[in-house]
Length: 132
Figure 1: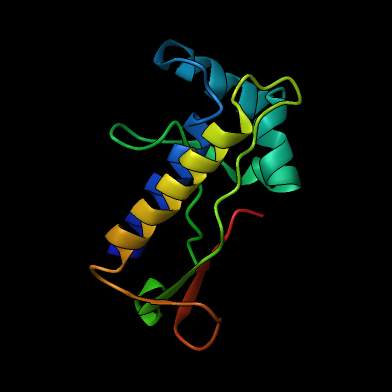
Figure 2: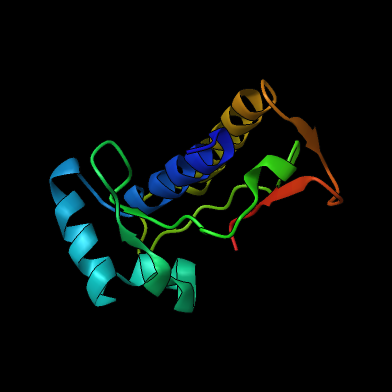
């Protein structure tokens, strides 16, 4: 698996596993995603949730890797602002949401800039990392 494919798999796993409250619930998340009953996951992915497959050992609980993607063509990454997703009754304060999203965005940027040029506009050779 190429470096970019591995990175996307890991990041998607982080986002999916963020929907689980504890590690013990990870199996429940897989079952909920497969059945479409996890509102946070299906709300995030919409109809694309059906593309997720159970990850292999060492991967995220659920993954999707486009088999037709040509990962080697990307040498730049545009990182969209990180968004905080939770249900309407979240107990995470707005200030904590800001701290978490800022931290995650900064960590993404620090890690990705080791191997890619970070850009603020799309273009040839640019992988757009978004949360939509």
